[in-house]
Amino acid sequence: MSKQKLSHKKRLRQMIEAAEADPTLSAELIAVQGCITKPKLQAMTALLKLLKPSLHQSTKWFITMVLETIKDDRIIRPMLKAAIAPENASCRSFFLWPLTTYDCTKHLAFFADFIVGLHEPNEAMMVAVMIVRAMKGPFEPIIARKSIRKLLAEVKTSMPAEWKIETEAYRLEAADFIMAKYFNHTAKTFWKPRNGSVPISKTR
Image 1: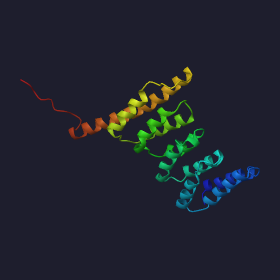
Image 2: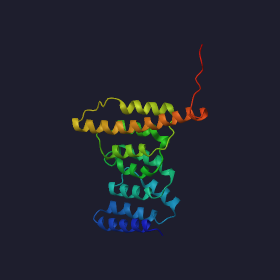
Image 3: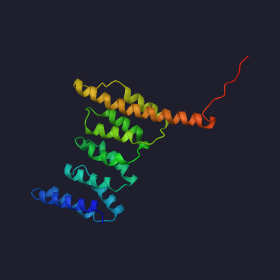
């Protein structure tokens, strides 16, 4: 058994002890405890099924922390769905942190919309930009261009001036990365079959 799994079990026991005064939270954590004793795939499936709207934030946090260590692409879509769920508005970043070690290239459009849809430069926005920067590409040309346009569009949400500057900085960082990755791939695609040069035809 890995030290990481032992650490999760130890932390969970501490959380269960601390939740004794709250029967609902205690029951949620005990259910999680039953999940993490299972083999990896079964544990992942069981934990994803537990991610319901009514869960306490601390339970959601612990589940996402465990899922982060599983390293299975099948957690990506459930995490994205949870990140935009209304009931998770105050803890969206919980569901994004596990994805910082995944290549989410296929979900570029989701993250562009997600970043643009946030109304303040919070932790969720920061983590979303980190995920974009971890994308390996290549990006679909249409999706890349649409994402860049959205991210570079004027911030129309009403917010304090300092927040607006920070939001624009995050959006610009994401757009800059997408643009660089997209154009580098386009350039390589163009030059590779030409061995790095294009013959210039002579005109009379």
